[in-house]
Image 1 (cartoon, rainbow, N blue to C red):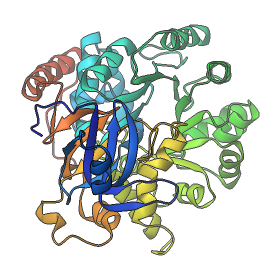
Image 2: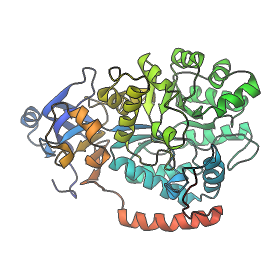
Image 3: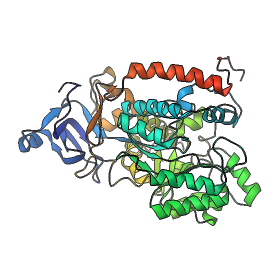
Length: 461
């Protein structure tokens, strides 16, 4: 099938299939039969083709076919238009309040849409089919439009904080009305509205309680940032006499509908509260290393995983994790999980791959739809090309080789809800060259409006 052709209603994606089903079956010379937006069958290719001779086929027997990857924490606006521009030698907090906040404050509706389009195109090209937006979107309808245009599956919210100053800050009642407006709107089949707060100590108790109530009433998710560094703990102790997670538990906020971004610096009692409440955590290891937040000393995410907690991986912002690559993130998590406890036996490539797929889907309450290649689930499928030199010779353990020896650059095709959105490594729905030209112009205009001097300087560490 040529890149320009649209798969027929019944279509077989061929290759070695890593199902991530309950038995973690891997099918050599296998295939995934797609019917419309769903997976109709998974099994040996010859059997699928014999049963459905009219089905078209794509792929090569040497390809690797996996579920779409789950990115449980990603800023879709703001950072993307100034990607890898914030210096990495700044004092804690300065990158946010001297750069990110002014940039967000000057974002126009078209900037939100362009930024989200860029991030989601890169995400899809690296195999990410589901993205949890991090809660810093000013114009959610424009971000929803971007997701529908490129064909990405996302959760979506809007700015939620009631600090005294800051872009889009407002009293708690108004913040909740904004959240309700997002929940009330039909954003299309690929967009799931969530309640989103900035978090940290930038939300009052009144706001987080109201947000929690809203998420439970609407049966949707609630996400916010908390404890990537020690600052949140210091501020919560000063304000409430409790650590952050202890205060949220006291308020009745924690629960299975909650996804906490980060949660790096947690005490023993906070870890217990997260586990007991079935609250999920999004781990973004590249951001913690890039920003020097101490993850190598306080890697509580490994304990959450070991004790059966709900955990996913996130790529975060393009001035924190920078690259939106799930395999790069999963490999780093696996390396930390081996190195921090000085134990290479307790966590490995297969565990990290689970976090990027089915465990990530479980963390956001979407494992009934995505995260594995099983009959009845959405046809979110990634095809890795194993003809690159990094793949030769082919290893017997395809997951081990994929995680440690490759990354998102080996992705050749991606399907979301049965629709091929990446073909021959390029997006099928947007003009990449034109997008690049628009992004460069938008970056220059955004920096001018923000009053930021982006000139590179050799840092004096």
